[in-house]
Image (cartoon, rainbow, N blue to C red; front, side, top):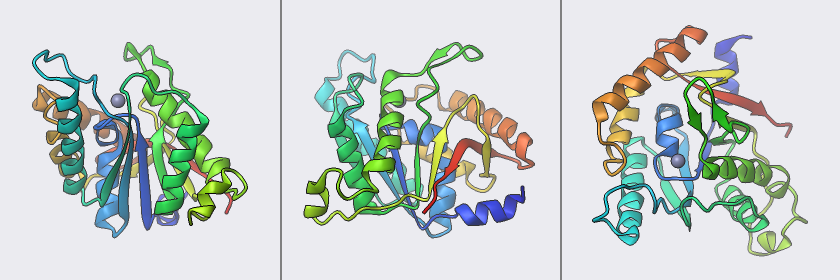
Length: 243
Ligand SMILES: [Zn+2]
């Protein structure tokens, strides 16, 4: 495969990242988001939950935590050169794959008209290597987003109320699924790793030890890069869809 041509064919004008929690996209794919933005793409985020459970600080109420995490995510996307964050505010840890959720994601896809959608690979349930269970919200977010891309965003007779509201059907060109264990497609992010860490720094309520995070993700990006001949890479499963 010719890597340069392959990336040139991917290069989006509009990107939509869909994830469960504020910070998910910034951990998994923010160097890629910054690269897309630096090349002129408009980058939008859709966050499905309110992030209200992501703290062990008992002095912070859920309401305060929601406001803090919204703001952290807005600032992080700004650092990456992105446009706007939309929050659906489902309760953190309760996300389910419902027709209503799929419809809301499809509505956002039809509104933003992305050529690339980035979300989490819902097939990753656990990782033996990393001793890790993939949060059920992450799996629900990935599954609902895949279902929204196809067929809901594409077919105008599915949820006809959407086009009655002026949200015309839209075909997404490529899905990039984040999967830390089994990526099959690598994006050269050697120029934008600094942006990733600047964005992650904005998630101060979630990161106690930034230098540890920086070290871990630098090692990971280096390891992924080695597989593709780049200094640093982020890894995905890439799925190109027929237009
Ligand atoms: Zn998460």
